[in-house]
Image (tube, rainbow, N blue to C red; front, side, top):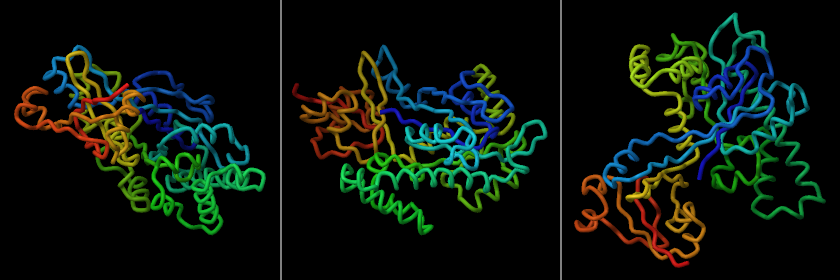
Length: 357
């Protein structure tokens, strides 16, 4: 299971620069004029996980395979996009295809970079984007709840649409949907406004450590739970360096973690994801699953036959696997468990599935 994050925002806020930094590529054109990105760029990035390296050493694995995350650089939206302004509905449709949204917010002054608005105001900019997504949702919901289309919608999705329509029409918070339905069911509704969100405040180098007046105003209103302070330009520079140079440069500017690492951590939290491992002589591999995932469903991430024919899962907690130096000693010392269909997989579990074909 690889999850997909769409990077959205107004034109010229640094989306393509961040995309290039995260994917360590120049695939996304980054130029100083509105609507530079037309077709969405997609980059698939391995998720760093130090635990994989430890498992590879212990199992003496020939291959190491990280789980992945996809970033999608989506064209800049402007006020009126839901009615076709700028590049309009074409790009709103691209947002529907992602699992979570990274809102890129400009939080720096610069006379060298155009701004579609007369001044820098991250709160206003976010509200423009969210309003356009909500208006697009309103139009979509009204069409789907039309008599001709309504009969083709199952009861659960119908309830979601009706609640969403009531919230939008009466200025209620759409978060009430997340209290009643899980992310998987909500994603099936294809509503933009309820997708899990991460806010990235794009700052200049001097604001990396402590932020600035713009980030403080933004965090005061929206909180810091899903908010990151990142300099897209600095991230891009870091990724041009060799490993030792990268470490030294990050120390010099007081940066403890890369933007990629911070985004992945936030992404896993907002999407309620976790990781299990398979490890042996041939390969050690990380797999991404939803939290509270049952063992058969986790097996299905490897192959559908594993889920269909699931018998049980040989299970060792990560810390036990490391302490006992692998499968054999873990089993000998009573740290390997046989878990059945009702077992909820824990983050870091090392699993070996038994199944019938």
